[in-house]
Length: 151
View 1: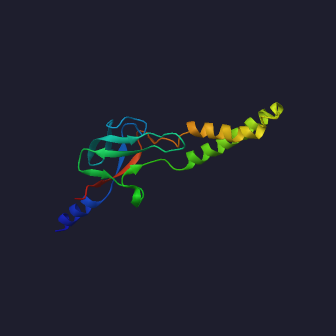
View 2: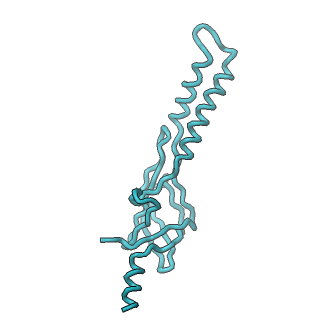
View 3: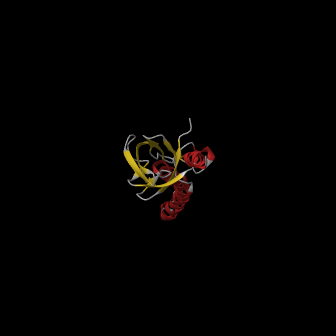
């Protein structure tokens, strides 16, 4: 009786595992990966979306071949792993600073048509166009929580 209760409790508990291969949102969808757990090794593939322009963040999902799922960090994540907002904020601040620096460099070129302050939005927008919000990079040894799949 106690053994059956222990097995039932163990089936629903999250298990701490380690990633044994690289996983990143810039990789192709379908790239294989593996996870080492105390109960055995699991394999799967990535479903990825790379970071895009205008500060968009990349994200990925780890889809396992066995009947287990990656336990989400937050309730609303739905298995999606994405970077925080830090890279987006720092890129916006650096782009604005570069715009101000460009204005300072062009102060001597002032004339009737060109004003140095015009360089601030031009530089900031052009850098923002090429900036990304960051990609997810999970290195081997990254800790994951695996949970048995609930039907």
